[in-house]
Image (cartoon, rainbow, N blue to C red):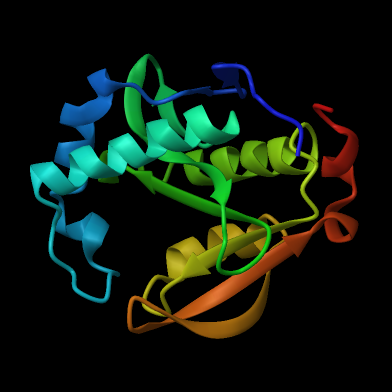
Length: 180
């Protein structure tokens, strides 16, 4: 993989930037929301300490690999986090995203996933991206399928059944040369 990525990049409507300590209050808020954690095996909101650890992991991933999940802004306002990270368990890069419930239904998740794929198959030159979705989360499944992912297998993640979706470079060749 070629890295590092620039500290920020734009899509049509989103600013995708490297996360920073100033994002902690937003992260605490978003992961305290029941509707956001409802699909976890244990659907308990994060404590502020767990959110701080999550942010530290995201920042550390950027420091170590030169890329990672972005802080996602729309109209100058932070709306979530998402992007690709190294997956030691399933091969390829792991796509994940969490958007604030007030930003749901505006197409931001699809726009974010599309840019994450362009980046993964372009400058990062990965051959495979995976997405992990709980069976009880059909909206996230639809986003992945709309972006070209296909169901590969069911896995146990944190003790709960999880659907593993994958996308490889040959399936979406248009991503391989863009942004390279």
